[in-house]
Length: 156
Image (cartoon, rainbow, N blue to C red; front, side, top):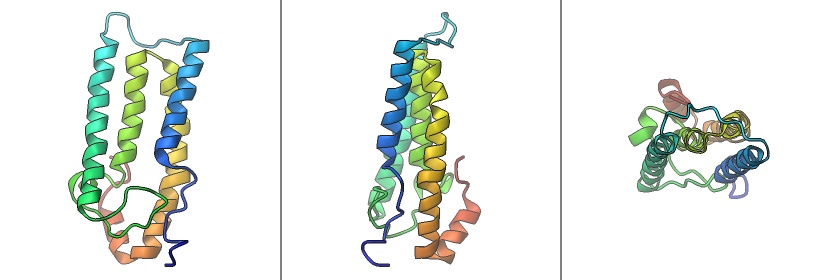
């Protein structure tokens, strides 16, 4: 593959897409609050706990990719198929972490808009990023990636 085409061609950098959906959810919640958590629950602490899990998963995945000598950025060439660590049970642990982080914010802020914004985030990740990554990895790594893809689920 040439240097100019040796990337997935994702429509957006995933952290930017995630940040945009969080900001839109927060803005909608500010304009028209839609709480969904019972008042009796410590939503802030639950949100912090869920976010800690999502953050740990994302950091574990990023560390695993870097230790394998590959790149996390979707606009840079992938050098190897990483199958260890969290990549042993999901092909997209960073994106699972992003969705879980979005849920954590929704819980912590008690904001149904943040929860609802998981839908566009999911579709952005699934079709604007992951579909392109999968196509790229199939072209670049062929059977090696297809074997991995057939044994590890896309999400969880």
